[in-house]
Image 1 (cartoon, rainbow, N blue to C red):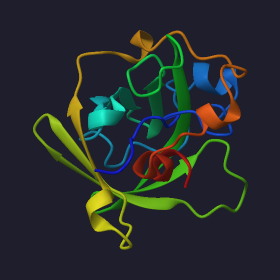
Image 2: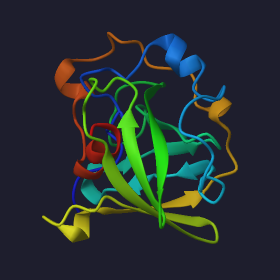
Image 3: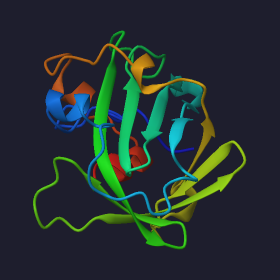
Length: 180
């Protein structure tokens, strides 16, 4: 199995979480994207991965009815070993029909073409297909509905925590999700 979904940021990226503190504080206050097609994928999704010898990489996706998406990567897990905090990456989903959504990171440059992801829900499972034909086996992320809420994912990691290398240990799937 390839690297984690969640060192990313999810973690931590060069952008240190993608977006200003104000953006992060307001992520679920409404805004662009519209609610068309979002109802089946809204909620908190546990995206934790067991990476075998590389440890457990704990992370969560939060998607609201307006298409706001936040990925919370817990940096104190046995994979990251960084600290008791979360790297936060935020973005926006826009339904384009047939379970497909354009994903744009909040801090993408103007004119950046969004990735198109396919979300399929089956009960308490949400499967995200990154639609990358180069290695289809590594382009699927299965998450499970969580009983947590976005307010559970605190504190946020400080921008200066750890080295740039540590903040950029990003798994392929996670990188595609938060860094199109």
